[in-house]
Image (cartoon, rainbow, N blue to C red; front, side):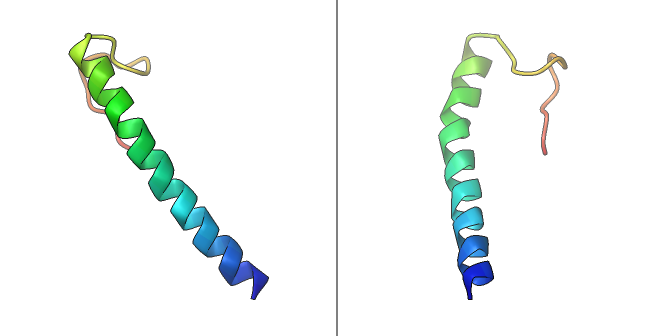
Length: 45
């Protein structure tokens, strides 16, 4: 029971983290400061 609840919370946290990160990546791309060491390439996890 608790394992299922923890799994759901983990998935929600992952989705929220992705949604929060998207605008920051877009802004970084706009200003030319690509996050991470690889410049010019889209880094996907």
